[in-house]
Figure 1: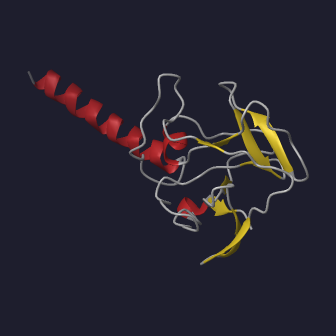
Figure 2: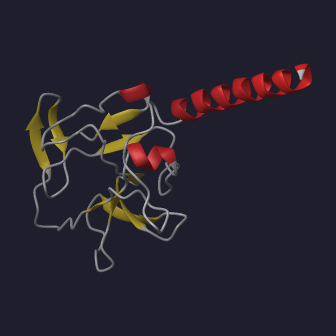
Length: 153
């Protein structure tokens, strides 16, 4: 009986420790965004950026880049040019800004391929994301989150 309690308590400590590590990987707690049948977050923003569009807007954080619908986009310090490192719980809280199959790169806008084959928009090679707490165009709730998420300016 004592061995069972020690084993159970040890398991809880390990799980709690891992949960803490997981949340620090992306600068916050897991969001309430569910996962789809394909394993992608159910809240994925497909954006149809066009060369003729204007995607810089004024906000409380100054001039920022947005999706065509006006939602603030962010970059993640753990990413590298041309590659996303935000998957699983990270992508639930920070949904990638995906590109339709017919989207074309232009100017500083490029398209990277995620490990699941999804196409994601990038600016200057850095993948773009939304933040789950931004609920209206111009919101910048994720700016500076965890010291690793930044609005594109």
